Image 1 (cartoon, rainbow, N blue to C red):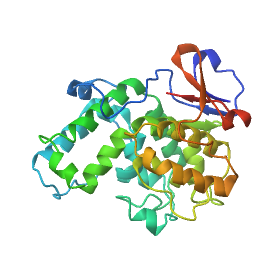
Image 2 (cartoon, helix red, strand yellow; image 1 turned 135 degrees about the vertical axis):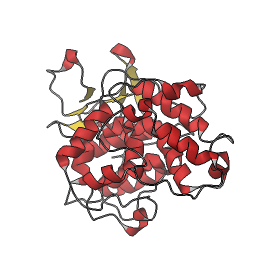
Image 3 (cartoon, helix red, strand yellow; image 1 turned 180 degrees about the vertical axis):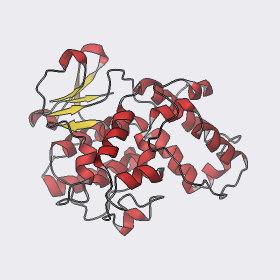
Image 4 (cartoon, helix red, strand yellow; image 1 turned 45 degrees about the horizontal axis):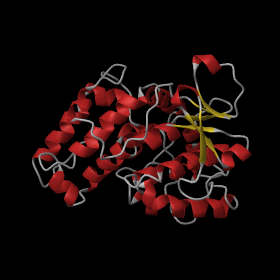
Length: 306
């Protein structure tokens, strides 16, 4: 069963769980009406954190507009943004996060699409777990509003509009990270029956070293050809989450999920990835959660979505 950790169900016996707190919100579209003031909302925790952060190396000077690096510096120094510890940005644009979570097994195909090589060297599982704990111990509604607002702001001509139009790689990485915050928050916070993060399991899986590639789908990166992720409950639950998010045309997943699902099904069995995009049935439960009912349910899993 895939459930959220709450005080009321702490003693429940589960085979797969999410460490995310109970504050959950609807999936944010990039066309949200959230105002720019959302960028200054407090997401919880302290802004002064030693944990990995996004864009923690030099921004460089490859910008068309002088207002774009100003925008980057503004949101990167904002305590509310920092406190969200967005997994969707740490994955691709945090040298610290990459350092602590990596192995030298990234294919050249995927390496070419990332700002840093994700699998540079395996470092500290403890440190990685601490970072994921911080990522998951946030108010996802508030952080989702912050990211949705930033996704709007970055496209503004007064910020990075010209660079966005020119497909500046750094700008596109930031934009995709903002947009993918919700699906990657929920995927990054999934845990297995032993209480280990599914993502941590994936990057330390020496028998299926491509297992972590699936987490790049929400960022608009295709699953490299020939990838053979481990066919387990974590992968199935993650694909269930991504399938639902792919129904939102504003998500990069809407462009690459179907192809990845076919590839996963080819490796793990027909319909392992759960069928068509947005095809899951749902039932409403307490606290406004939606419980995914599909192939995962038949396998003894129930996935809690946003």
